[in-house]
Image (cartoon, rainbow, N blue to C red; front, top):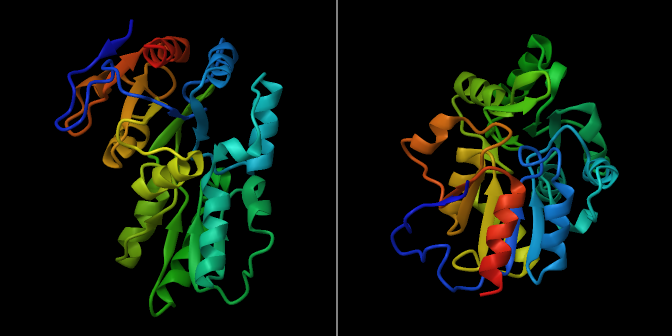
Length: 270
């Protein structure tokens, strides 16, 4: 069942009568059977909804197409994803990336100059994380006077039907260690990433937005660091030990997305 935690210092408890016009959600771990009905109920309410994902193997267009086929009523403008956000950063800063990314997301960088690279962009490349490809990225960074490594998220692992899968964070850390640098993260748990989603929604983090996700660090911790409240869903990559995490405590726990939506809609109508 749903459990609300005690309010964190300086932040009202989720069940007090404060407005919650914005809901951010991570589509992966809270997905599965029965997700489309609660997501439809959210969209039909007065709450603003945005899907905030670290998906970096698919373009935003492909991701939205997949969600629509699963029954979601969603447009590209309702999805915050790291690849298009990174593409904007590269353009703004005049960066020419060496791309260590999955072929499925390469189209997001189609308008970016990749000749004579002055940075490395790393994403969840899956099977592309070979020694040869990692070593090439390492060499590009080591040849730069001021090496810039941009990582699309820094997740440790994620869950697929076949089991747990290593995520981009493990490979990002390897390059950080080898090069003696610190990566710039575009994606969860970066507070700037959550802020960009909130800005697009037109809501403030404090008292106005709540995150629903399965990742105690990426979803819950990241959202709380930028002033939001966060519910952890006991699906996807959730592990029972998350509820005793030494650094992050969710504002509430729910067994599935439907339970989270019921709580939010009850709260919104008070």
